[in-house]
Amino acid sequence: MNTTQSTTIATAAPPGLEPRLLAERREDLAAYRRLGGYRPLTDAGELLGEVESSGLVGRGGAAFPLAVKLRAVRDNGRIAGGTVVVANGEEGEPASIKDRWLLRNRPHLVLDGLRLAAAIVGAHRVYVYVSDPESAHSVETALGELEPDAFGGVDVRMSTVQPGYVAGEETAAVRAINGGPAKPTDKPPRPFEAGVDERPTLVSNVETLANLPYLQCHGSAAFRALGTSLSPGTFLATITGAGRPPVLYELPHGLPFTELLALHAVSPDQVRGALMGGYFAGLLNRSVLETTLDHETMRRLGSGLGCGAISVITDECPVAVAASVLAYFDRENAGQCGSCFNGTAAMAAAAGALRDGAATAEDVERLRRWSVLLRGRGACATLDAATNVAASLLDQFPDEVGAHLGGTCPDCAHGAFRAGRPYEAEAVRQA
Ligand SMILES: Cc1cc2nc3c(=O)[nH]c(=O)nc-3n(C[C@H](O)[C@H](O)[C@H](O)COP(=O)(O)O)c2cc1C
Ligand code: SF4
Image (cartoon, rainbow, N blue to C red; front, side, top):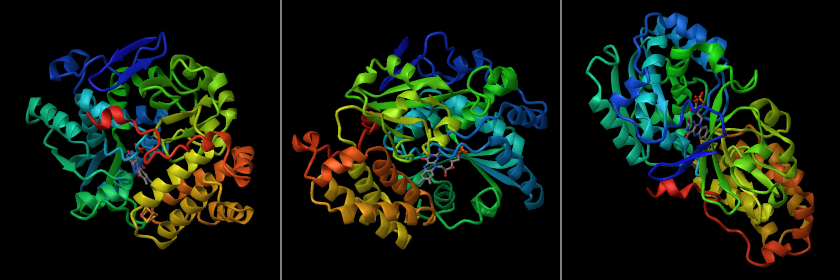
């Protein structure tokens, strides 16, 4: 394994994988140019074609095809007379550190991707949207190194907000840039229809954008040389849990989960399951050992890769993990929608009571009902994340749930796992 240590977190890639996104140290403009960065773009339409053939899907959580969004914004912009691009680096997900790592260490890669996206959609203005001060400083330094016309006359701005789980949701980003609170709004309109200043707006995760320079230099066939046909390319995976410090990996989509465990030096025998997609996609039991890390496999299991954050559960009780995550959603939801505000509170209370051996079978039945009925409610998908956690706990860990109905399980009896932000990738947050 090729392991390097940035200022704050270990990074690694599987043997033989030439990283496309990770780098050994923070790069300045000269180093990035030596790699072929900021290559002049002669035909934006041709690059859009390459994005389409590459099958690149978003790395912010929803795995939506980038080319579809680029086309929609570009086409809507022809009518509206101008478009905006937002590089979303807010990364509200506590178990993820990839976006901050990219912004802190490869700001020019992200800016180059932003430049290319802006050219494709014909943007007149672009934003780098962050909450992490070190990321903001890194991007400002990188912008200071660039020549004034590096973006071809496009207005480049920073937008900095207070961190929060919902602050990176796309309508929250647009609302914050428009001068409001960083809280989601009802959809429609979606940002690609009317976003910043009511202009068609592309909101793309910074890792998604960071793949564009590779596509410009090497083309879609090279891009597809790694990954699966439906999840092409590599992705950044923040791995927490298993009693080990977090590591940021660049992995090819489709990698068997057991190979990730081997890289991370965790024995499969220790593994009880995993919390997938940061806090978003719920829990998997030991069946996670049979999976490969791609969107199609995870979708088949009713789970997801999300933003690529995976927390490996070893010693913690899954009931206690779910209770902590639900309590986090209860605290961190934006308090705008009754179903979310009340629903996360009710699910957190039920899961907390279950963890503490105080829940009845009726409480568990109610938790099951809420996990179905509350899905799809609320202005953003935070409530879906909470229902994913509740439903997957009941579905994947019936024995542990049963053990808690008879009191607490042996693990919790020794002191339940009560992390306020379970599996937080602290090393970077505290940097
Ligand atoms: C509650 C919530 C929080 C989100 N937080 C982030 C975030 O921090 N960063 C991000 O890139 N996307 C986040 N998203 C997804 C964005 O809404 C949006 O889909 C994404 O930025 C689009 O980029 P992509 O297509 O490149 O993935 C969040 C979504 C939800 C529902
Ligand atoms: S669904 Fe929840 S987190 Fe999302 S906007 Fe409504 S209250 Fe806020």
